[in-house]
Image (cartoon, rainbow over all chains, first blue to last red; front, side, top):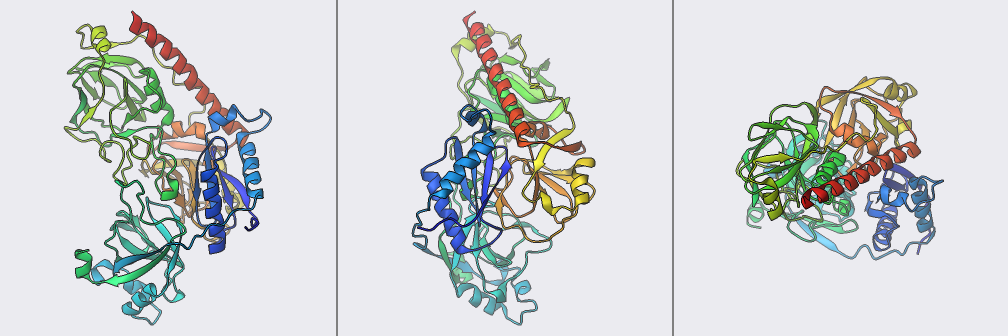
Length: 236
Length: 329
């Protein structure tokens, strides 16, 4: 049980409020967000449609039209909903065991799947092989899923391989591509335009629309990458 | 028992009111760009507002009805015809087996909606019929409609009887899709969380200057051409939720308004948000259109949305009543 860190509530639409715990990337805060997300999913607020966790914020979507009938006329639905959220946040959150699963992800780091590995080495006095060694040497925490169906934002990479996003995003990044953006690492589940520095590709299907649980990873998971050859990739 | 695509349009997809509950997996709500008009189309044929409709862009598909149906068109007016004879939009129209529905030119708007009585019979994906083009899922095989596709719907004997062998019959009432918004080019917004990141001059420019919707505009978002706006800080915004109507500041000082197929999260400053009641109006605009932003309060934003929804409820009551009487005769 922990008491809530400080937060702000602000709207991002006429039917959504964001609870923001600061513009930071931090596992403790993220675990707090995930606890809040689980609580809201289990005990939704009246008129709530869904909740979505991000790095350091959680957003609650609600049905404005239905709630208008319920909320006293002297208040906007937004004011009323913010009050409900504050009440929810006044109760200490039950932290759940978030480090339960370690998921191992095979990645082929060979040249044709790693168009940006050279860019990652730039000015750092390391070789592409060292980039791979550094990338696989630690586990990564999945902070959130966003942007695309099943796109995972993980962190944090060793500062030796930290690289800013590409200045000019690619028109097409292949599905399974593993990339770096600043301190973050992530996997493109679908082919899409994108600006992350691509250093490898996994043969795993990160997003499968035919499954009941379509994403391989969830926020709160821990991931470790391991290298495979091109041959293993093709026969995976 | 189906609607066949004789010739494909540029981008015609199955849509509904959106897919909720899965944004935590990165699956965005999507749905019709103009949800108000999509509801009007369903209401006109007596459907639940949650039935699937086809969202049409111009040039739109040419359709053949392989069974009789009761249909309606709403949103944009693409000058529709059945078997070569013009039919009005915003009216319920009975169409017989073999009827050919086509569209001739853009009279007004950008997105039209086609509903059929009883709805289309397609499987739901995560609780919605909407097409998610990115995930290639939902709607009709997760993609835009193409030639020779056949989308199933149920036909009903009483429709055949009412048609009495006519090729089509226009029911004599029209839906009023004007819910009382008189501000044509004016888009009401309220300041977003990062509004204060703009310089004072840029804040003024948001409301004092015009914005042109550029050609880089689609179901994901509208990129605007404007006097470049300036931020007082380049501090990164950690990825967080965005929404339909969120206006983000791009690194080049231009703005983008996120639309139905927006990504679930974003990392650009959210300088303002378009009120929900104006999403429909925005969805009917096209590249080249000029818009003006005007700041409003949350109170007004909510009031206008409720007013819009109440208009739909009244329309639904009126249409249900008329349709029931028509079926009795």
